[in-house]
Figure 1 (tube, rainbow, N blue to C red):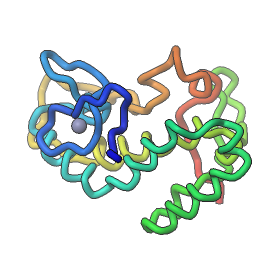
Figure 2: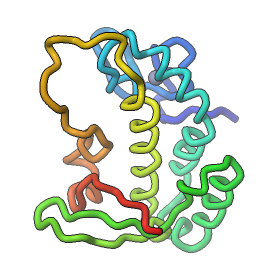
Figure 3: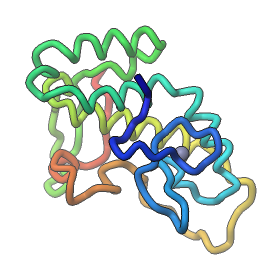
Length: 174
Ligand SMILES: [Zn+2]
């Protein structure tokens, strides 16, 4: 039994990173989170933050073995319970309001019906808390202007059918 998060089984090149590699950056295979790092100086802080959120990474890994039917029927209940147990009730599957990417209208979707939506929110949460929240050691003059918010939807626009339908603005429905 392992906590490998990808079928490839490659570990992220960042020392001590608990996530599996999913992309190549230069000569290194790194996870999606280190792949988004603005600088090498941020790597260790990203690793530290990911290690504090290993339970979320493990939850994402476990969803690979869950079929959409089983998810909608019963498995979302266990997922909600697991999130409560780790003190992240905010990450339990629930109804989210999203904005349609093209028409700008608000659409309500229930993560309890759509596993991919929930996985996407978990990944976006990790990006926000482990990558975007890391302060840069110094301002790099080559980085000007506001970058697009980095989300899973932006990363895989052609493969994430859900992301293609809705934009990345996820609002948790109270
Ligand atoms: Zn990593």
